[in-house]
Image (cartoon, rainbow, N blue to C red; front, side):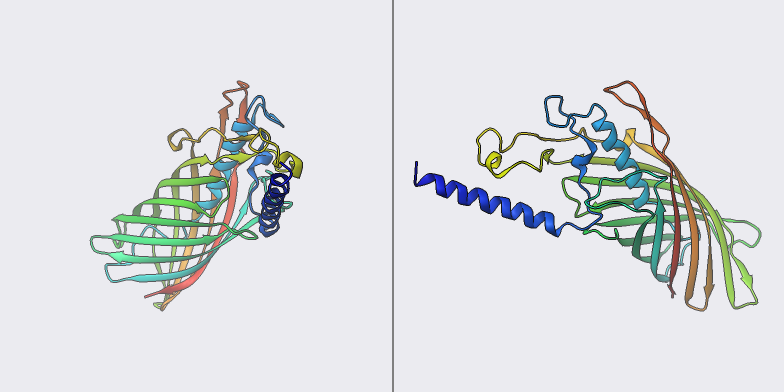
Length: 300
């Protein structure tokens, strides 16, 4: 026993050091979702509304990840190609996010957006985004079809489907699906520039799951080396089903095109509403998410 005890202490010390190193690498806005409360009745820090806190959080953050469109309903044409640098400035309505450091909104989400025109008024796009002050990102794939475009006296109408996934988040996963309808009209200015104002409505579906979460990360080295304590307070949040976690997003913006240069801006408002907490029977109101989106790029 005397020989085995130092070995166990060394292993525990190494595990503790690795945990500290992981915490040291965490950036300010990386999420620590154990802060939302422990959903296990017998667990440390039990919070009756913990599962609802998680659901409200992913609904808000899902809205943030999908708060941008920055393209009118018209497509690029079968040979068209566009490359844009974009920035979303997201306001969470005063909500506090469970981040490693203190969250001070608004949240900035820069991204790169590539779109390619296809035959028959279709358009395929992909967006890669980064969540500021974090190691997380988000990837989006989208497909748009212009039901009507290019007529002199009629507006352009487009239908867009998209899938967005959170990347490199610790302990949880968020996937969003969306379907939106946009309407806009292109106007020529001095024969050199086109201006396209547009508005739209987007129905979003947000789903989320978690892995096993340590709801007592402050456990001591001695507790980490004690059988029965090492994995105590490891639980998961209830999964969030996308079909039961929907919200509406309304947006409007404009795009200037001069030669191959593109400049655009858009405002987006996601109405997140409320849902009933299954544990307490009380309604949970989720603050709306407001975003300003801006883009510059090239259209070939």
